[in-house]
Image (tube, rainbow, N blue to C red):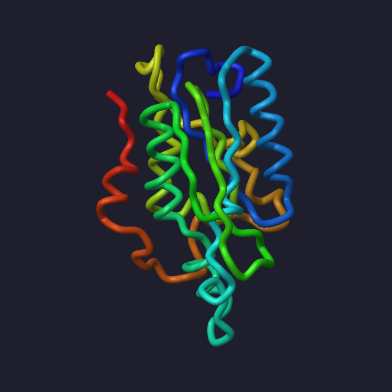
Length: 192
């Protein structure tokens, strides 16, 4: 599925993920603008406001793994914002929000009305528990459920050999539980 295939009334959750500073925000804005130009009600959500405070986000004894496991309040974000918006299409939520360099939360209001497509942008969105949320396309043409994540280029046989840093699909960090069983059950796709 591509942005051109999404129609008004569909219900789609798309994850735009990659390393910091690579242009995720630009791509997210482009996707949302294309969809809105077709009359599709699309919302861009960034995970940046769901960072943990620096005292929880950083640990000098094991900085990389600790950041990977504790940087973002994923469970809160999915339970309070993403899944309810996906399921109900409309949502008003006041939540704790933080900037990258601040040491305390501030209140932030999210307000969405009758959303067809959620473009969720941020790092680490393809962790194992989150994979299923981007694979389901439901709505007026739910029979054509497909994944909307990889560009056609990635399907070419020589794609990984041509990239300077080939993606192996394996994490450098051991798999650990970082999201509750209840939230994991809610992440399962709702396709018929």
